[in-house]
Length: 287
Image (cartoon, rainbow, N blue to C red):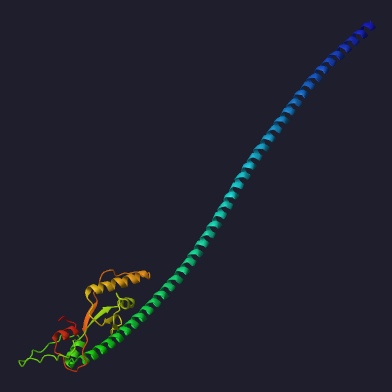
């Protein structure tokens, strides 16, 4: 009896032990499962946290790179603007400097031009004054020689005064009386002089035509001591043009200009001449 009880008690103890052992194993297994799930959850959470960390890091890195890029762009624009401003200021400075130099050069040129104009005016005034003085001197000399010639020709003082003033000479009407005596047979005819301009006649032509001549009171004319017909005058002008063309001078006056006068040489007699034609000619009129 006692053995059976002991055996039953052992059985119950073993049963409780096995039951407790199974519960323990199941509990352990469940605990392991829980631990395993917790570990997995922890690992997953760690993975998620790492993932979030990495994502945040990369996001922050991208923002940083973009911010850096934007900052670099801003700095580049500012540097470009500063460079453009510097270049603009430098160009503006050069432009102002060039304008100042050009204005200075223009002012110097203007002053030089004004001085040149003033010199030209002074030289022109001096030249005109010299020409005027020379013309006045030549005119005085011409008037003196003309007066001497008129005096030697026997023209009265009133007629000479009218001729010198270039006034018209009124020839008095001859009074009725005996006819003038004929000229003596031994009195020679007065030779005719031809007055020609040196503008169209050279001294070489005078020598080539073997002409006897003298200088006129006006240095621009010569007096040829004989009558020169028109055809001979044309030949003399052609000869002068050919000579000047041969020397390489430009001939600006190709038209013919008859610049000659006829002057009768007066005798040395002091007898008064009453010829109205001569007086009118000397006074500038036509006989």
